[in-house]
Amino acid sequence: MASPEIPAMPKAMERVKAAIVGASGYTGQELVRRLLLHPQVELTAATSRQEEGRSLADVFPRFRAVPGAELKFILPDPDAIAATGARFAFLALPHGVAAEIGRALLERGLRVIDLSADFRIHDSAVYEEFYDHAHPAPDLLAEAIYGLPEVRPEEIKAARLIASPGCYPTSILLPLLPLLRENLIDPATVVANSMSGVSGAGRKADLSLLFCECNESARAYGVPKHRHLSEIEQELSLAAGQPVVISFIPHLIPVNAGIATTTTAKLGAGVDRAQIGEALEKAYAGMPFVRLLGEGQPADTKRVTGTNFIDIGWVHDPRTDRVILMSAEDNLGKGAGGQAIQSFNLMAGLCQTAGLQSV
Picture 1: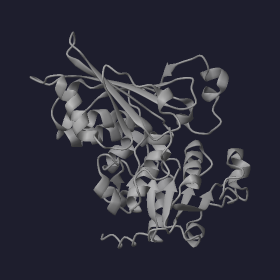
Picture 2: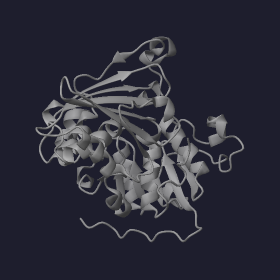
Picture 3: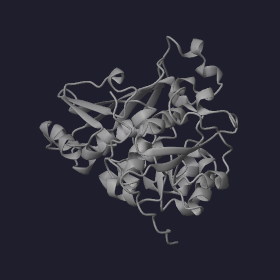
Picture 4: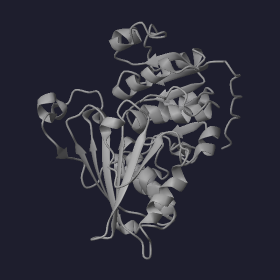
């Protein structure tokens, strides 16, 4: 099915109208924060069934006195959202829910950046295997662009529908993709261990996420087949040019936000460790949100929380001939809302860093 013509980009000083569907969760709050402060965006709609009629400032008091925070939450009705003049919509909704409203907004001429898992997986059978229900909009999968701005900037610019990557996948994919593309590591030996702050589980009432359950505690979960494996292995396989299956062990740690990931793999035959640093530099030199720390430098979540940066360091272990990749990001920033805005900036013809410059 042919895609509708992409609307013309805005003129120089025109503010781009955007909506957030599902704006009351942690990721929604990050989108609200960034878009209210974005110099070239007008936030015209924010939806929440629970908070309908309340203003952004009432629900999130930190935004009091911020211009635009008087905007009131509305129900997630596609016609009402389109009536606000929004040209772009960010979907911060659970998987299985986002696809229906995403389709409706596309039909009304909006361009959609979906932060759920609904459009990340190319194969509807794989989606069903990992998410335990049939895909709600399989006909849209071929159109959706997996939105890693450092990997597919030109495709993102032209897209109607962006599948914004998950937080864990971003922290694993960006260090690994250049090495797989250049055949520097053995794909069969990849093991990724990640630690995430509690906000990654979403803003919901859950006994296991209460302060007394999480504080002074660390635990693995979602093993051995966390849902994010589906998109991780998909993208690694595309980079390697062959099926890639990895071990992925996520952990919950007692911090609000941040992801630290350590990924290991054996070097390929005849590969010198210096080629690791060279491949990363080649892939990400000049990329505004990838900070390469170099050999022997671990990444630290404290340096990236509240930002859209991902820090990447690495080291070679000569005893095992394994490369150890270390990355850190904010799960709500580069792992969610910030990365979605980075893709939006590309789609809207804006500077990629607009609204995202913070340290």
